[in-house]
Length: 234
Image 1 (tube, helix red, strand yellow):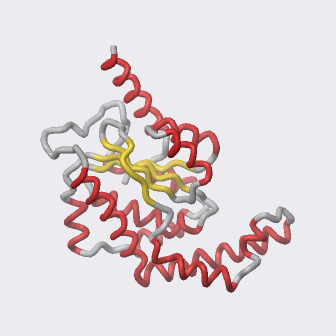
Image 2 (cartoon, rainbow, N blue to C red; image 1 turned 45 degrees about the vertical axis):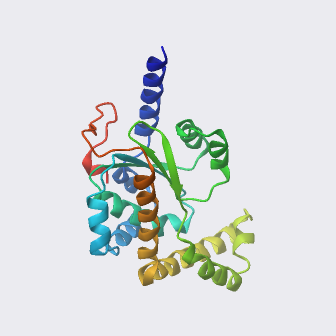
Image 3 (tube, rainbow, N blue to C red; image 1 turned 90 degrees about the vertical axis):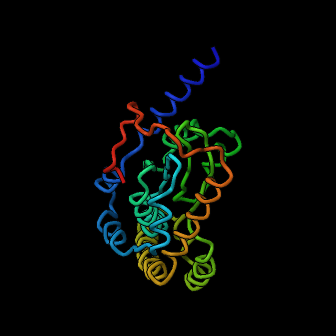
């Protein structure tokens, strides 16, 4: 009976996962799709990082929770997708941060405290699961190296956060202008070193999972027919 329940739970988690979007589908509906595509072309992996991700031995699933209103999404999501494209044993999906979606994501989490924290999380948030849908770890929304740069920018634009809470048309127009400026500034920061900082962070998480986890690199089957995933989702 316990085996059946576990199988049903795995099936439910698989269905939740496959309701999330492939990256191509997310791009098609995103207002930032052109900038995301440009960012994708700006990312390069160092040879040693490329080798690490290409030969990563464990089957793994990523679910990336994103916010269309966060400049971190434009900066970081393409880095994650670039990594995923290099990693043949990794499947990835993207999900928006609306309330309904977050309720679904919470059902994938094995820890109620972690699930409850999703509503207050900063996005993008990378959630990592093994092939049996056990929650492993998370990363996001950005590498810590960006924090002093963000603090400096926010100090120079003290009205940014206040404008974000003001629903008046004038305030929202000013907020959107500052958001566009921050997005472009962040793009420069990432191309000046933060792309590699993000890659190094994610590599560290995956290395830790492999070294400390129970996954083996034997004859596990990555071809779950009920997942609906395909290689072109990266």
